[in-house]
Image (cartoon, rainbow, N blue to C red; front, side):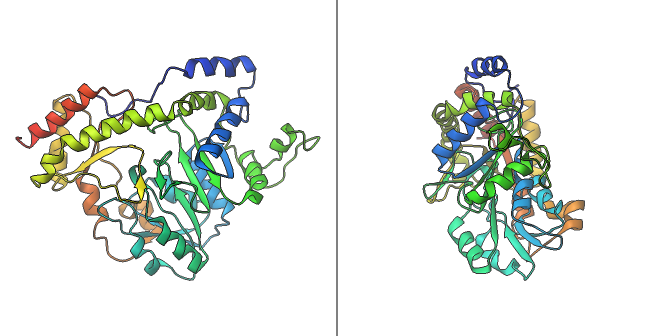
Length: 376
């Protein structure tokens, strides 16, 4: 069976894990946490960055630091993971869903302005598949209406918009290092922000509401409860695993791009024949080959294709169920305008196996089996 996903393994993880164990510093903010933080600051040009236990927690921290209050409205696409909405619902906000673009599956930037009301506090663009949203338009709207921008870049680590790393363009950015992502620490994430004056508040929030981080740096002689907080600090063991992968970013990225390009070229004839639609990468975006998806005619055809591939020992999956159709989505939010593409395109989309250690021979086999389904 060709699995849909396997966590990447580059060979240096064991060495760094042994070093972390030998250091005796297994909890957060140890040597490897600092190394990962510094690496990302330098390579993604971010002034403020903290590792977190997940992207979900990075989003929750962003909602808190953006001062989201009960009754505020937050604009985002419905085609996203539940954590994107949950982070703001937990603060008492109402979610305003906007339709997506069918080419990138990202929020349609042209529809955001009509969703803005006097209650709107933030826009949350989600960079689907590591392909950038049209951020210039979004940032212009945010400036016009004095809104915060929280980038959900869970899938966008090492992707870029006009030369800027995703997650570093808005007021806040959120990364995921879950085992399904390009670079992993098993479970983990990061929050990025421009305003360095937020660093102390973010550290307190991440350290259970205490100034423990300042204590470990020797800036205070004891630490105490300062503000609201929770436990958002990952183990240094997790960071050690991630650091081995950050050291091999180019190697991982090159292999994933090789797989992505092989899929893209191998399925071109099916698109030309009008049988599928392939992903679109706008000129402004440099993507990270986070996933390869194709879109078929409708939900029924997708169901049949998934079943056919499984019979041929290939695991493929669909992706998000639009949030506005879910019970919680109806309870905590509303859809602005017409759902032209969100539901329709989500029902057509199918993800093919994509992971660093996937062999090119297996990719060729998957391509052949997709062709076989269509009788080509």
